[in-house]
Amino acid sequence: MAKIAVVGSYGVGLTVELDRVPDAGETVIGRSFRIDHGGKGSNQAIGAARLGARVDFLTAVGDDTFGQSAGSLWQTEGVHAEIVVTSAATMTAPIFVEPGGENRIVVVPGALEQLSPAHVDAFSDRIAAADVCVVQLEIPVWTALYALEVAAAAGVRTILNPAPAPAEPIAPACDYVTPNESEAPSVAGAQATFVRTLGDRGADLDGELVPAFPATVVDTTGAGDAFTAAFAFALADGLDERQAVRWGCAAGAHMVEHAGVVPGLPTRAQLERRLASLPV
Ligand code: RIB
Image 1: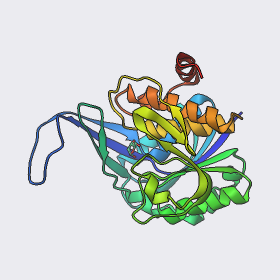
Image 2: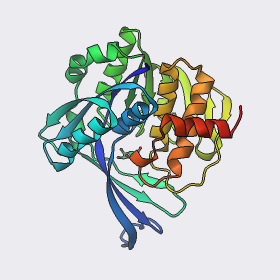
Image 3: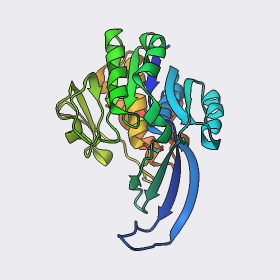
């Protein structure tokens, strides 16, 4: 069984669908509002578990209603969560989605700011037992980089999804980075294999284009999470890099056809059907 460790965020997405985002000083009327489970770490952990991996997940939440509701989500999804409960609020993420499906996200990390290297140390046995360790940047950058170091020292393959882009460029040492086009400059100095996600064009694997799967876009939120989860799963399951990127592209295509992130993470059967729809 593929084994994946994820060190990252849980948060609640506060999604507004609207015709267009307001300009400064302007008020616009939205079309709908919903509250969803989210956070890039949790999304990627659930994505990998849904494909069949054993997933161990380290995160932090607040001692509040949002934090309390997360435990049952991970139980339902079969994710083994190590939850640090802090005095700060659970992460929230206001998300604005325009009619074309394009999203704009504001992350308020709250409890995640307290996720520290000491918490990673306490989780290090689970990292060492994994085939692949996946980290994103909704947690403090030093904690994310430390988790990658701990994994590498244990001989575990490492993936950094540099989302959101850090305020200052970083040069992480890891096996793979999976930025989108806006995030790529912030990790340009990484000593890693680059897998750049290119939206409806697919992904670039160190200069080689892996084409996208056709999709009818409803909401692009979570496409990067679905990609990274499926890419990590495929690597942990023994596929080669190019095949793993194809899995990522297929998962991203599945995601954009759904409103909300958790409902858009494919099962293995759904992913395999999409892979078969576009022969290599
Ligand atoms: O990548 C999408 C995710 O970013 C959403 O689930 C939201 O919670 C933010 O973390």
